[in-house]
Image (cartoon, rainbow, N blue to C red; front, side, top):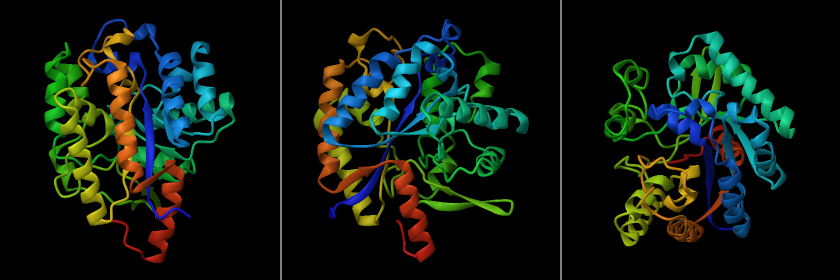
Length: 320
């Protein structure tokens, strides 16, 4: 067995229309998609390294036949699927209980009918979460939630997003919790059980840099790469050193735009690092995977969840 520590790897399959919708851009309701471009691209990168991950899929994309082959190929090539809601609205926490149930159950059924795969976990769009959402995924028999993002810079990221958008006051209010609040920076990085009435659900946070609680998911590293490749690699090495010192097993996050560049013609220029070409991004992605591989082996979220539950049951400290 490998002596390297475990790290989970996941990708939120947010489609072009969902970014446009959240940003307030016209034309989102025509549901433009880049899945047929980005899915083969990230699958090839992962397959070359023998890595299996969890891909959180938006239910709306499973409605359209144009996306069927791309979504099915994820499972066919050995990866697992997670539930990322139906409408991908970061104000999911404002929904009624009935709306939440419909959002999550419809997505689960669509993915099962298309691929035969049963989702085991959920991640909220824009890290949106509420007790009602957790109650629903517990009732659905899900084994973990992956919606928490313990970072101190959420309000800054939201302010930048609003500054680049054409959102009116009402739509900004809907998105008032996008990327979370500064209080989220006090949240734990370790997997833990959350109490929901008489039940519990395992929470696996997206890992941020221990102690400093600043992000180091791939989109953030690519943003740093737009200034300096050396800076991005040094930042990642620092984050992983702190993870090892604190015993944190990272849950590392990817997004589709990490694999798409300004030369792919998808627009979305407001998203960090979209000034880079796809080749430049792929070069850094390979560097990032090399750096991780020195100390960690990537597993899907479900395997991370199984390990965390076993450790918690045995009373073994997981992090921090």
